[in-house]
Image (cartoon, rainbow, N blue to C red):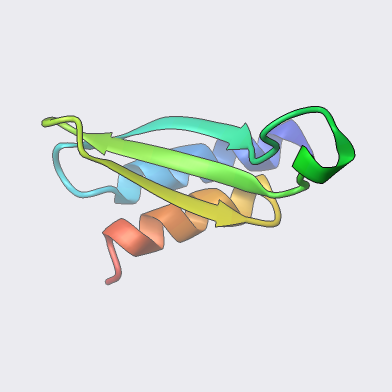
Length: 75
């Protein structure tokens, strides 16, 4: 996956979020460096004005961002 695809997905997801929500991060789902802690999944995170957080985990960064936007803006 190229960085331009991720950049476009970030912008598209951010534009779809409801008012008061912003994208807060995109990270690898690994919780450590040992083989049993490693993951190829990605987690996209959004927060609202009050600090409430929503996350979506998917197998690639674009799917994580798209899924997060779908979760918060299902229309």
